[in-house]
Amino acid sequence: MLDRLSDTNRRAFLEGARTFSPAVLATFSWGLVTGIAMTKSVLTVPQALGMSFLVYAGSSQLAVLPLFAAKLPLWTILLTAAMVNLRFVIFSAGLAPHFSYLPLRRRLLLGYFNGDIIYLMFSKQNFPTGRQPGKEAFFWGLAVSSWSSWQVSSVVGILLASLIPDDWGLELAGTLALIPLIVSAIATRSTLAAVAVGSVVALLAFDLPYRFGLPLSVFAALIAGTLADLIAERARPKPIGAGVAGVSGASDVSGEDRAETKAKPDATRTAR
Image 1 (cartoon, rainbow, N blue to C red):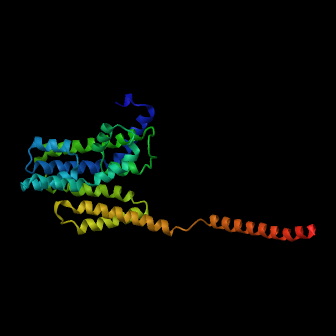
Image 2: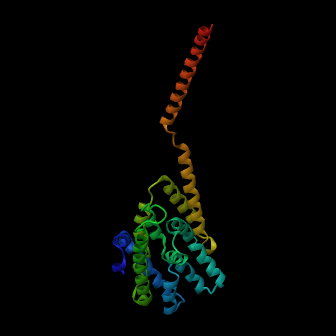
Image 3: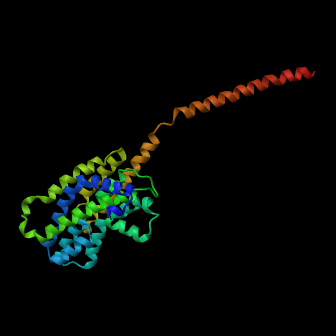
């Protein structure tokens, strides 16, 4: 596949894969936990494999497993999954200016491969919007690395669930591996405000039904980050140079007016 890419796209793809490499451990741990959980629930092995490849969203997969076990109505399961995955709407909106020139079919494919860590790492590159050589290839470097590590670990968890003890603490290992990635994304005060408010709201709303606390914390984080940006913008002092230029200009005009006023009486006396 790489042989068919241009030199720019090949380098960008490999750079995307290298950028994702620190997150492979976290992704592998979460995929393994999700695969084990699916197999040890009410799902059969073919059903678990189908969910892994079709859904490809670990948080919602884990969220709906207890609902399957409780034999709740389908609308309840779908609503819960929608609440958990509502954050992907925000991720897609963030990617839209970068890939809006692509055909719809290709954008839908990008949307399937998008994810939390992928969006975070892509955003940190500060690409300009619109068409740019190597940008889509960089995204695919991230996406292929994420999808491959997730699916391999998920399939291993599904097929070898009976051989993996429950007390290994793989879920905690995945969480600990994700923390440095999240902390590295906190580069501004608005981001810090968003993380702090979102974390508090997520904890307070943890027991809400249908996992409604997750989208609630996301929207709270967005509002907090936006307000922090507005406050910082209003508190920012105005450039001093502009004020000096205005005063200087006013002085020049006043001087000209005074000179013109003095010249008028002299002209009148000459006419007399």
